[in-house]
Length: 98
Length: 140
Image (cartoon, rainbow over all chains, first blue to last red; front, side, top):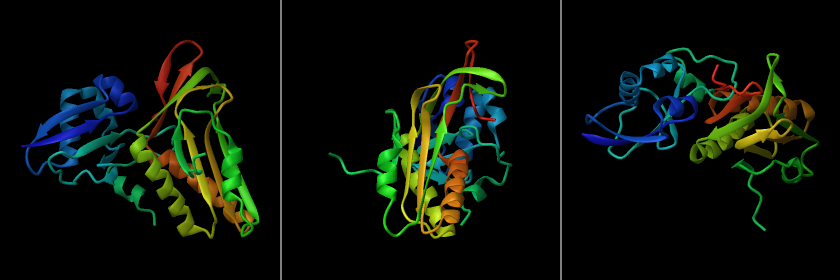
């Protein structure tokens, strides 16, 4: 098992009632697995699936990124008033426009 | 006096003058300043005030990265981006983007690009506090 520090912001923090939490995940767990676990525990987060960005240790990360013990995972809800929707599967393209 | 920081997340009121002073050099003939201001309404519904929250440890590097993205697209000079967090009264400045470039077209385009990217990827969130007492995060 590995220990992951989760950071939550804005509406997600309101839904969960906390800004930070620590979770135990299976060794080899991905960023996406952390999100799925949060949605299972807090179903009202589910409507954000596919419209999120993720970061591991303050760097943008793909949902498939494999976590290491002690990593900080930030769940980044859609940001302030941005008009563009994130489509599922397009998340990473948004980080790499160059 | 602390050296000027071009990329800042702060709870203090924003002033464009230091950003312009930093960005403006003899190499560049254009300096564009964009200010995003807390508006008194959204979609016809009256706003009482706004609050902004950031993942500050990450937001500062993301602002620097967005400036580099712009630099890869246009021949621009110095860039400064300051974003406010905390409670903003109506009429206060939420974000300042200052871009210098040899010519105005590049400066305008880069400033617009930087604002679009801030709203896409910078981990900064806005909560609208309506005059009727309700409040909501602007995620949509």
